[in-house]
Structure formats: structure tokens, C-alpha cells
Length: 311
Image 1 (cartoon, rainbow, N blue to C red):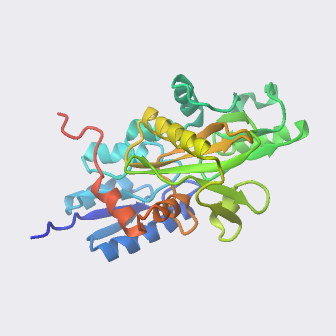
Image 2 (image 1 turned 180 degrees about the horizontal axis):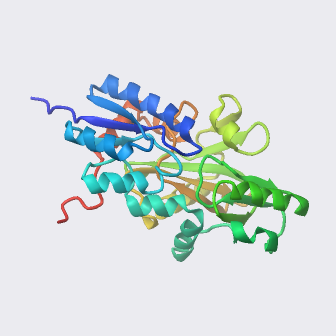
Image 3 (image 1 turned 90 degrees about the vertical axis):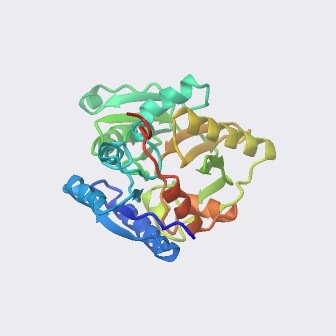
């Protein structure tokens, strides 16, 4: 007799700047859950989340499937709630989620593991007026704790720096300023702790910003990325090293810039990568023979707790 399907509570929406992306991921997850036969309910994660998710567990929920992105969701906060009420959840644990959401601390961990990263400086919102750029232009200015390229500016000229810092400060008090690495943008999705096919990202205009990420037709995606076999392997190796160094669990995505001479540099590690119609993880998974429904099934069945089996 086939085992009964786990009862799922699907968490989506949230309070971050990536709310609409989350709702799109949630719609895809919900359709997959229907087709897979999982009983589920949906919670839009607002200020009453703690009450609603506790009620869901009391009503028999066995797994939280996280279709969330950005602040208050991808940063360990929702994971902490699930840990506290002992409701297994998809994706990474509290530490990995908080670590990878903060690009500054991610860089420190990657650097300690000898994984190549871009040169960078730190700025604080309160110190913008005194900030002195020590890197050669162009540079990339971004909030340390944000996703989907929200608040990111590529600064080509010194006169643009202050407005870029102000824009990043609208989203976080900690600001990352890093060298712009000329080359190819590539991402390596990881599923079930295996590197999938690297994807080359080619925006038709400007850089891979929010609009180019989530508007169909604005970016070309090339699978596999047009890299030598050696560079492809090296990129996948670094992706898995970063994945494990940051204690990411089950699935994720590691973003790179690859120089013209084939040197990969890790930009960031994503613990809850998007699963919208234009998102990269589902594209790569499908290219590797994993359907979207199977992807969702893996996330549900691999859901767990940081403290599973610990008193």
C-alpha cells in the first residue's frame, strides 16, 4: 500500500521587496502540489504568520514548503519559526539562510575556504558621506541583505557613486561595493546536493536586473553555458564548495562571473532560488531530466529541521 502524502503548508508572499516573485513561485508550487496529490493549504506570510503557521501545524501540517524570497523569509527568520514549532521545512537551515542572505558575511566564509570572490569594500548607511572608494571603476554597489538585484547599481563614473550608495541604503544599512568583473555571467543550480547544468545569462539590455530577471523575453539563457569543459568543471566544483562551506541544504544556486580567460568568481549563494516561469533552477533541472513536479516533490520529501533528532 502506497504511503499517504504528507500534508503541506505552502508559505508564500511575505513582506520583502521580492513579494511578487514569491507569489509567482507559490503559484507554480501550488499547481505542482495539486498534480502530485499532496493535501495542502496556502499561507500568505504577513504579520500574523506565527499564529497561522502554528494553527496549520495543529491542524496536521507535516511540512512547510517555502516559496519565499528576500528579507523576513530567506534570511533565517521563517526557518527559525519552523524550528521553534518543530515543523520540518524545505531548503536550508537557520544558519545557512542568514549567512547567505548577507553577502558580506558570505564573502568572508568563501574567502576562508579559498573560493575566488571579487575584491570589495564595505559601507554603512551612516557613513555614506565619508565613504572613499578604493577600488578601480567600474564597481557594483548593492545592499548586503537583498535579492533579485533589488537596489543594485553598476557605477561607471565617480559622479554616480553617491546616488548608488543612497539607493542601496534604501534597502539595507550595510552596503557592499565590489569590483565589476568583466566577463560572462553564469549560474550553477544545485539540487539534491548535485550541481546541475550551468546556465549562461545574457540580458538583451543593460545588466541582469529585476526587470530582466522576471520579464519573459528580456534575457537569453544558454544551457550549457558556452565555456570550455575545464571551466565548466571548475565552476561546478566551486559551486559545490560554496554550497557546502555555507551549509546550504538540498538545493540552491551559486552565481558567478567568469573572466575571458576562464577564471570563475563567486558573486553570491542563493538558498531559496526562484521557481517562477523565468527562473533558472527549474530550467537547469528540466535540462537534466528533472521535471518541475519532481523538483517540488524533492523539496517536500527532503524537508527537515536543523535540530532533527536532537533533544
